[in-house]
Image 1 (tube, rainbow, N blue to C red):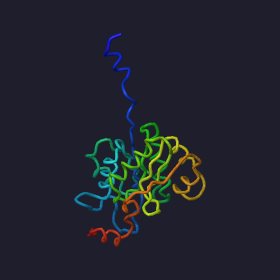
Image 2 (cartoon, one colour):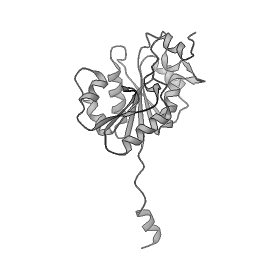
Image 3 (cartoon, rainbow, N blue to C red):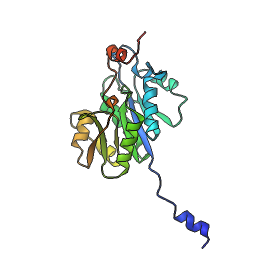
Length: 213
């Protein structure tokens, strides 16, 4: 048998591919402005989320849109490997509905999936990488980052876990679905306060140096 054939057959395992779901279907009612496209650090709020996820290994990202869907799609049109799913009932549903739509879209597209709301842009790419590395070990199905004991975003999960979360029918939204999940899951302590920081109000935004015109 040719040596070339032997070498091909002895190739290493297939690399793990990560994807991500970003929930951006909220009304932004408390902010008084469309949060995903607010300026932040030379870009936008959602641009920073995308950058951190990409830095953590997410190759394939889907954004779940609601309000101003067309505006958001146009603003993000230059990104590669970025898809959109529209939550037509965004005004009457909670984030869990958007999570379900995004996770359904990602089914079969990745070996591990991050999930985060679009208004939590301050977690680092290093944190995302740590979460991906922990999931890659294969010991847990869901990994949640915590900072000083407090859970935050992004979460990361195997497709099998995502499939179970989608089926959750009891109260509590995504948090309740994760709590009810019977498979192996864990928290991962990270030195990253950004996993807890969201942008709900103009005051939150001002504290981060932003100004709403």
